[in-house]
Image 1 (tube, rainbow, N blue to C red):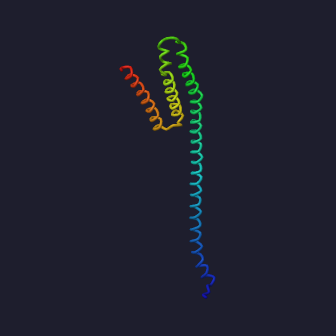
Image 2 (cartoon, rainbow, N blue to C red; image 1 turned 120 degrees about the horizontal axis):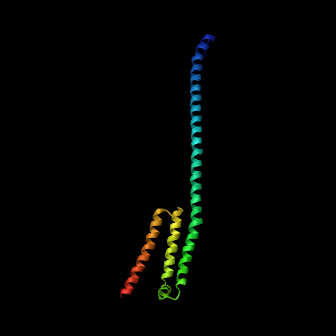
Image 3 (cartoon, rainbow, N blue to C red; image 1 turned 90 degrees about the horizontal axis):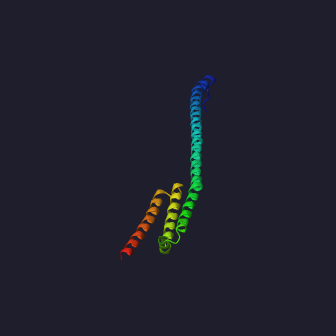
Length: 154
């Protein structure tokens, strides 16, 4: 085993200690940089969470508005549709509307369309489904109207 003198040992240790000191200071700088980056990311996360909360609050307010104003409006219109024939009771046109079932069909279509539009306005139904449902109801109504027209012409 080789023996070092005090001077040789000091000469050997000095560059090793300097290299270790450089590595340690570099690690400290990287750690400080990573801590700054982490703080920035945490601040950004908090900011995004606050934005998400405000968006969700706005969505809840829209849903509440649709329920507060949409449903009573729908009920008033449905009630109006029911009361109009009662006002004109006894006329041949009203008797025909009741006998043919036109009022029932009209109210059903109106109720379905209104419910679909309310659900669409509150984002409970996506655009593709909304279009499909409205298109299906429109096709049904137009088909019924055409068959009635054909029946009258016969």
